[in-house]
Length: 198
Image (cartoon, rainbow, N blue to C red; front, top):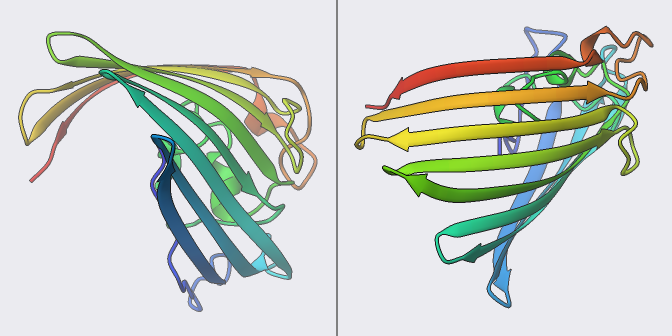
């Protein structure tokens, strides 16, 4: 589900809100038939004021059995860690409740513990279901829970159709750095898309 959006060095001196130096590394391997993946990154000039240091980390374990796969993942961003160049929709749930503050760094930290299951159902359609528990700097559901369900049909090397349903249930903790919780209201989203790759 996750792919790295970290650059070894990102410096945006002309955009003060984005200006930072981010250094990261990733590693992958296997243990007992389980695929393991991890990322770790350090960032200076984190936060809206660009005055903090912050750490990012990600760890996943994926077990493929037959045509199905099961992934357990844990992603953590220290308060203020910003990712202005990331494809944020691909991370932390498809309801997009955390996107804006992750881009700007205006958040109080984010820890996303999730489990996903993918299975082929019929006519080449894959069905993925994901459950997220989101909290601040601890593993908790203080921000809320999210359930995502995705149907994907690849017609050929160019065309893919995707349908997504996402539901986020807020638990009320303040996510944004200014103390407002507007970005974490209970949210439901549905989308259908047709992607063309060339």
